[in-house]
Image (cartoon, rainbow, N blue to C red; front, side, top):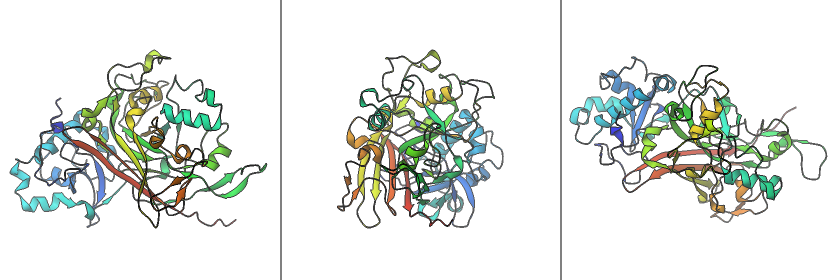
Length: 429
């Protein structure tokens, strides 16, 4: 089926600023609360949120096999279960409705009143009910930097890293949408030169620049997902700030990996950008030649995406400081390889599952996707635009991540994921 919505020549009758992340070629999906406290599934063009349930009730999706209340939900999960063909039909239809020369809705003021909402008048929600959350570790540069910091610099990568997309199962209950503040976590740490752990607020809270993909129902328990089919089960992508408490992690991670250091919060952007919308921005992945992956992970063609990423720290009193500029195309393991590996043992993948990319770092220091790397474990503090220095995130700092794709014809973006770090709650024994 042709993706008509991707036509770079399309214009909308909704005004779209030149550098908007949300032209008519994007058509992401999300969930929002209107000023009348009505929760609905919608999309966005420019600075207008679009109520898809209202469009459906008005008959604009006639001819597409959708049940009556598919958009009258508080999550995208039911819509996601309908599969790739339906996602594409709906997205193409939305593109037709809002095309500049289509007057059906454009010239109907009473219908526009129930369909369109200024973006500042809606409250974005978590887009999916996340059943399971998996976080990968798929940037070669990031894994190498961490290996140099904590292990032998000459053998930074562990022996398995070039053979499998390393990952771990995270905690879905503490994933929050952009705009929700996060409290500094408390736990056990082992201070330098001490022999016994202490309890208290983490002193080394960090961000991790990631993206994440959201899946549909992909297999039955016991069945694999072939790598060449994996993208058919990926609904779309969001930005992910996988908050980390480095000092808690250092004490707890042996032998079973991250626990309290990772489960206190992860923040995601609110608009899910479909894989279809990202199609024009496919690009080549890093070479996987020495060694080659095992046959079930081998793939041909371009399965990476050219997504520009940046991280900004906004102190409580001071100017924003861009501290990282990176790109998703640096990832060594692709999303399709991650998903194929995840299910190679028959693990069931469900609609609404969230798969984090792992920290996205490039080869230059300004592209490192965490403060752990940017300050080299706290040894080289960063100076912000207001003169303050940072080794890790301080109370009342806001971390903002943005991402977008751009070529000579169109820009497709994710908006942002933004979250403030609040002080830890006092602990009462």
